[in-house]
Image (cartoon, rainbow, N blue to C red; front, side, top):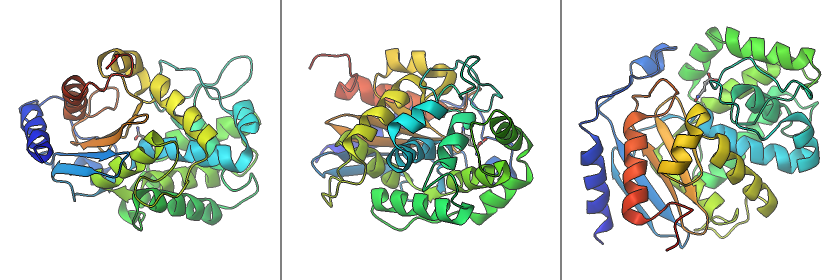
Amino acid sequence: SPIPDYLAHVLEKARPNEGGAAADYIETLAKADTSKMAVALAMVDGNFYSAGDDNIEFSIQSISKSFVYAIAIEDAGLEQVLKKIGVEPSGDRFNQLSLERSTNRPMNPMINAGAITAHSLVVSPTANLQERTDRILKVLSKLAGRELHVDEEVYKAELKDADRNMAIGYMLKATGIITCDPREAVKGYIRQCAINVNVKDLAMMSAVLSNGGVHPVTGEQIIPHTSVRQVLSVMTTCGMYDAAGDWVSNVGFPAKSGVAGAIMGSLPGQVGLATFSPKIDERGNSVRGVAMCEQLSRDMGLHMMDVS
Ligand code: GLN
């Protein structure tokens, strides 16, 4: 197949781009090897391709927000989730302390306030941290097709520097959006962000979204169909934070980025893809990752508004 060669070419084309810097709010991310790059494509028919440093593991970070939103919808019901979390792009930074004025809801589930709320709805509002993180780890492992683990070093480091996320947790508690102990919700959220993956895992997980919630290889319905539509819609409008508009017009498929340098993209009915390169821009999106996704979208005709 010429596809692996093509993917290697995509990597080399983006490599000279030296923009951005590794996230430096914790030591573990700051010391990431910024020369590492990888890309993976998982077709909904089960075909799979990858190139570059495709076994390098990194923390999933904010990409977990997509899947935890799906789990919250399954566990609490869409109606309840919509009462607690909006679906409007915020235009703010991902860790902004902000809520909708009239409803007190976080603007959307892709910023931290919405993601911490989604986490609090996993299993049940009265569940504990262990029960929630077990459920999340189980679903994410099933999506990836292998057993995933929490990076305890990342978890500990994030927890030591969690003042801002704790502030968001207390803000949510004060306004009645979450009802559990805000520290438990924030700790659980930080734990879900510290799950280690590689680009192959992310492409596979994304392909499940592209395939209506059914795993392309095992055939198992892992995410209910209605949740998939909701998740992909919110990824389209909010997945790249305050770069969402730029992203939709240039790249044109639902996507989610994480501060460790990964981007996960999903074109419904076609493909799940993932890129990795640690240097991120001021909005928190991988610089080379954005370049690679633009290239893939152009070359493979992945823009959802294009008629093929
Ligand atoms: N753990 C990070 C945080 O909550 C994740 C953010 C991200 O990937 N954008 O600040």
